[in-house]
Length: 479
Image (cartoon, rainbow, N blue to C red; front, top):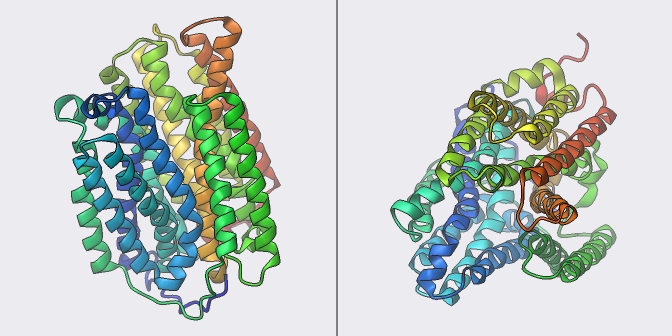
């Protein structure tokens, strides 16, 4: 992407007030977005009854959201440069909020699907552009603080969403699962208008329409195939076919980006080892473990152990507390030990805690389960923040927009891939053992498989140099 960047505006003090406020504003919007994606699943049966359709038909509401988001994510970085990151971020929040209103007011499935499609467009622009805003506001030495603040929604919302959605659906009605976004969105808009600056880019290249269409088709088909694998809404052959088409178009788009003078996405970021490892290779495998665990845990407690949604939610809240608890010491840990050591050692701890879930049973004492959940949440939080920060540790100003978009695209892939791997192992184990329903044995194998993936990804970070990202972590490698 060709652009002349505006002058950096770093804070005068270490992660000054302005940078903190901007990161908080972006985090509020991210929380609304991620919460919506997890809270809606709890109300699908009630929505189906309201619309007069069978529950399985409601899956289209999730699928269409995913597809429109996939199609427009590649456009986010260019749009932020062309029209101004602040303006595009405001537009994304407004689109998402208004679409949430129409989702909550929908009278039939058609109206709901249209509103969800529009909501997906707002979501596609929100994450990459919001991250660009944060990257511009903070100096490298402040990046750990900034990324820690804007990654907590991705850690907490998937755990909190099902619990909150269950309460809302039970004690209010499904409409409020969407209407809850309205006040959050309005507050977000006000905070952006008040605190986020509006630097402009100049001489932005024309839209690479060919690259946009190729990458949009590739990502859409790839994520659709993974989504269908998770939910089993199509046959395995059809899902694999969609994934194959997505991979082919992704390869075609990659070749296009490498050939043209002004590509929609600048792939030069992948030449930077820290970005490539944190987002594409070891980072993707690590995120598979990170994303599979919140999918498997509720199923273990409710399906494997037969607990109610409320009792399962109590366990998940401990896991949620662990995710939040690590935030206070993430920066000191990275400063003391550096990215390489943290990603290796903490990654192994995280993998061990995931593997220990395979040992749980309905007779396991509550206190022991709580300790394990807390440890798993703490280590998961550290890994997630370290990965997201390391990805941008060595990114140059001219690469930020494309790097942010690429990171968002790959995180979407790893999110669904983690859930797909977890679901695939569960179904494979069930088939081998000949059971009609999932049993604790099936979950045991799923957690073991995910833990092994985590171990392998953690050890791959040994390839990083000892001083990787030292300018960001402020780790003194001469000690």
